[in-house]
Length: 179
Length: 304
Image 1 (cartoon, chains in turn cyan, green):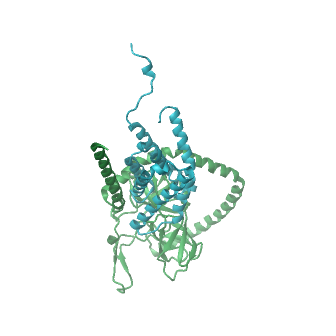
Image 2: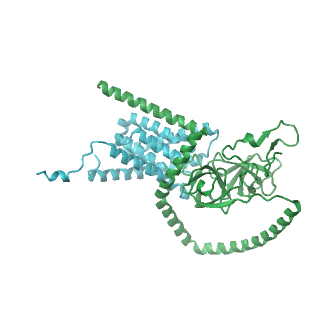
Image 3: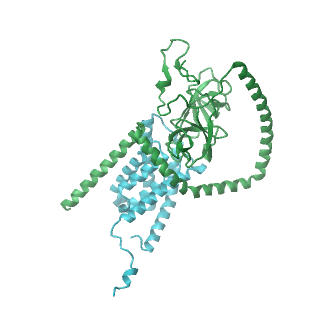
């Protein structure tokens, strides 16, 4: 007779693919939420980069969950829905995560304040990169106030989002769905 | 590190390098107006729009709730304001009737040709501009409702933009505030022509206005109808500030709060909307050649 305990044991996912798929889906959902938030007059023309906050957190603490290809896809869909330059955000995000990856060992030792400051630098870098190529391609400089507002809102929302992501992660750990 | 591990790392680095290269080249290819890329973009927008619509429904709900609470709080003041506005509108209606009659009589005298009637289609905005680099909006109708590229999009207050991508059931509009939007306009008070240029911000810049034109703050800016794509007389905005020769126009429509819009279909006969190239319509003549600096097609489609 087969041991009945085996039926109630948690499934052992050897492959990281289901988790990667889940992380990718959350990232994409955040892009759609960004688009949705733009319908609120306060965020008109400059909704916070929620997907970037998520990518930054996951690449810092759970790098295997979010491959570069998924980051590219998240950035590209953001470009399709929100940007004029197709691939602008995607390229900026990929380059930013390469730099983050190179500094991960040091970043993991940082306290929250330093991490926040680091995030500010990276987010500003992404927006400056987009602004630079947008200006070259369109031969025009867009309104800087909207870009600064987007940067400011993203920076302000970083601690809240960070807390929520950490909370969700701990919840998943308790349920035995995350390591 | 084993040899196989080294090979894997090398392979990954090459893949990542190619991905960056592809992403980088996409930025320039996207602007090159390549038909295949445009089709992919339009198709994917059509695919993503319903998902965005579903996900942003709760956000719209929250926004409606906040708006409702704000309205209830100011109900009394709003009522007084509306009564005053109603009185004013009644006076304007009487004035409009008189002017309409006068206009009809003048048209019959001068033999002016009425512009072709356009059929308005009401559509719901699925998205709103969320990025600082583009002011475009996805609408719920596309080719299935007879929408074509180049159709003007308006609300009761004035011009919102123009359709630039048309899919089967979704279309994308370029708003007047987008950096790529150039609208031929006239000043309502003096009829001097100019061009409004978007800045990806809240205001438009009025450019190419002749020196003789002396715009004043509050002057109404209307579409001129030059080029034949947009009909004339649609309010674009009002002059908001004039500083160091820079004239800023505040859009007539509150673009932050767009729910439903009207797309004015038709009226593009004689214009190849797939190839809206400048050369086909206007040929620059040598300076000092004569009275006109440009030749082109008039509103009846004849070369002049």
